[in-house]
Length: 164
Length: 154
Image (cartoon, rainbow over the protein chains, first blue to last red):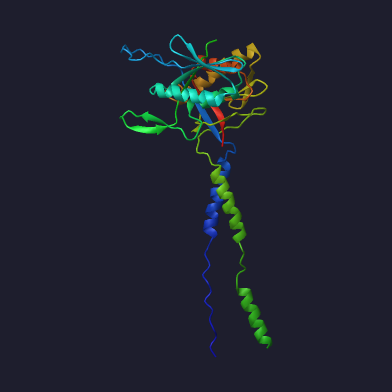
């Protein structure tokens, strides 16, 4: 009488994979940071010494942050361009989009906050100055090689006024 | 009959006991996905001090390793997690400049060109007046590239 032989399904040897996963988990646990940390750069002001004649006067975008207002000033003599309440950040961002459209080569903004202006609010103003906040608006950016590409950047070089 | 019973028993003993690790694998995979999601490629490792809440921001630039100055809600100043001063005290601020200068000299020995970057971690309620004092002191010493550390807004 012949015995029926059952073909057992071959079992995978998972031990090396498990070892690798364990090592990977240890590595990730050691390097895990449970809050996402990013940075906002602020460069020192650069003094330009070129003698070339400018076609257009510089924008010299200056944002004065007073107790409850955000004042946009432009030009070398810092003429008030527009004033917003500190909660009108959407409108403020919209105005900066218009300014960027008119001055596509400009990319810096000088921040002059009031001494009591809180850091959290300064960060919000910086966010609205550096980038377009609404997701459906893009601007055309002209690169050095004259190629055009969509961009969400506004005035991403933030300079603080730190004089005492 | 008796013999058959013993034979069967022997056969059972020969087979190695097998653990069912399927559930363990499931847990490990979930853990792996979670850890991979929270993995941050930035070289900046930050241990926040007590009483410090970092504000939220839309910024997406990863932080880099540099000197870390933290200012908590009680205006205490920390350099690389070591308490060095309180902004309210003028004498402390003078001491802060000295300590920063020392740090810069130490870093200069390791790097060819003096470091300029400094990571500034301020509590969300710190007023600009205090921020300015720290920025001004850092700039006087030579740390002129300020990197404001914020929390992702996602």
